[in-house]
Length: 502
Image (tube, rainbow, N blue to C red; front, side, top):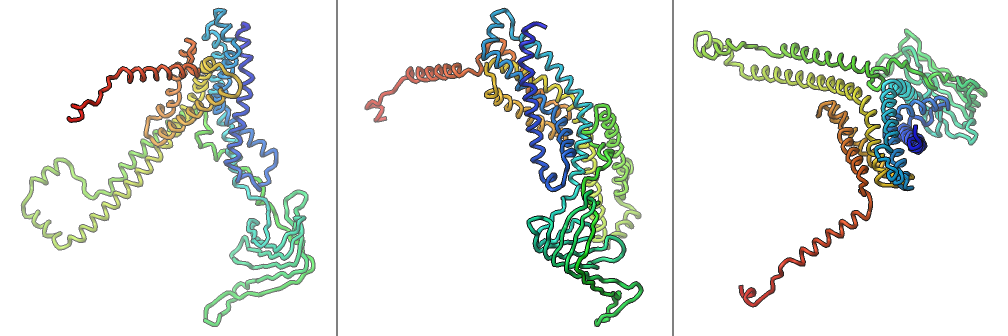
């Protein structure tokens, strides 16, 4: 490897790693902001929280690689141009294309890595991350009693306290309703009232303990087989009431329903994000066959809604026979019930319309599923190719702008990355809705940005001053001079007496 190649590669890796970490951090913050309500008050430990951040950081790498390559290549050649190192290379007979060759090879290698990562690592990380996120969503919030409000998240209990002391343990004015969780009995069968108490968990955090002081326990028991009659004569089951007064009472409640419960990961493997390229190809082929078979089944099941089926020759023959004894008898048979025939025909038409609408919606949803799996298969390639295209845009732009650092290069990189992101989302939406062919929607962003990269490469090879302020200032001055000269050379009519008379 020559010294020029070492210089360029060494200037590239520092901004690349830094930019990649910054972009991953930004996407993780976006994730936390989107799901912040799912993490609050769930008692998620640091290990679980670190796991979900790790999985989703792996998921963001394929999206972050194009922006990292764009910004780092732009900064690399911007710094070389700002400190006249590109000028020195050109004066030594080294062309810009030769100076870009080492990073061209690096960008090609990163594209191959992006494809491998999308096909192997990303499906595994998606499966782990989204299954863990689902379990966090399903986990109950931590126990949080509020003053004057019934807390109902404990299975079988409704608890209200009038006042919570600052220590978070001592409670005043407790009302506890116990609901049956099994059996045929329903309603509030036991009520506990206490003047004060303490609430705490055991060391293993598996049980919640209430130590109650100075209260009453009211219980109602139904007597099986014994019925009573009210004053209105209605029959109801007889019941027995019991009251217990206590000075100290300990109530132990299981916290089994709280905490994180892991779900089997096999339940999430149906999604296209959890599949590699071979699995997507097999599933897409199966879905296409299923869609074709469903279309044929719809055609077969629709025949039951049609009462009469005519053959072409029978229809022709029926048109020719317009009179005769049997025709007159048919007309006379239905002459006195036209409303009944209309209602029957209307009902059949409505049934056919409902059947056709429901099956059309069913087939559209099945076809959209096929589009989703096909689109994900194309994205395995498009995200890898976008890395190379972002290099074709960033490297020549850096040579043209001749500015390094995190100033103008960051602004230009964000603009092109937003353009890539918007075109990708637009193409995906059109492809999923069936408005365009799936490959067209998947490759839309790359097809639009690739010519832009080639144009910038051509301009950089010819030492274009595309972003120099002086070029546009001089062009504007020339345009102003042309307009002034044009108006100065135009004939000016003078107002004479004859013109005024006319």
